[in-house]
Image (cartoon, rainbow, N blue to C red):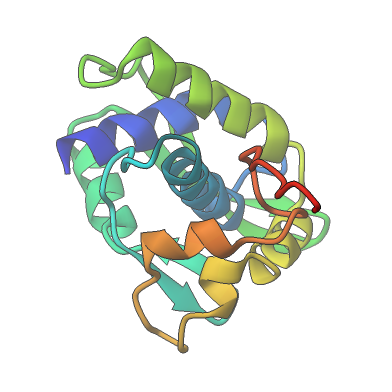
Length: 166
């Protein structure tokens, strides 16, 4: 949980000024950071459990860790309007502790933020809905990390060797 807390705070600190990044986009950034990392390196970034909810994958400890970060004064939660919709937003009040994250992990998170933090909630949710790990999981079920190895090329982040034709 400590590592997930660091990743969540880091993601908030790096994306809190983007007007499109609310709770939904943050959920998807965390999901893709975790599952893309697993596909690339065959190990978990934080080990957080993700569930298939109606609007896409969601981390199980998100609300509890947010409350902890807010109680510690590290973040502030607030409501804002974005294109006429209510949006739950977060701002970091201090630099996050990243002591449990390696340079490789930080670079991966930065790459994930660069790839997804400019998307709207609708765009990133639509992408998560075509990702095989989410699709292959029953509603409200826990998403199995191993399913990343069955992704199609549209969501896969790993270069797989193509079989040689005879």
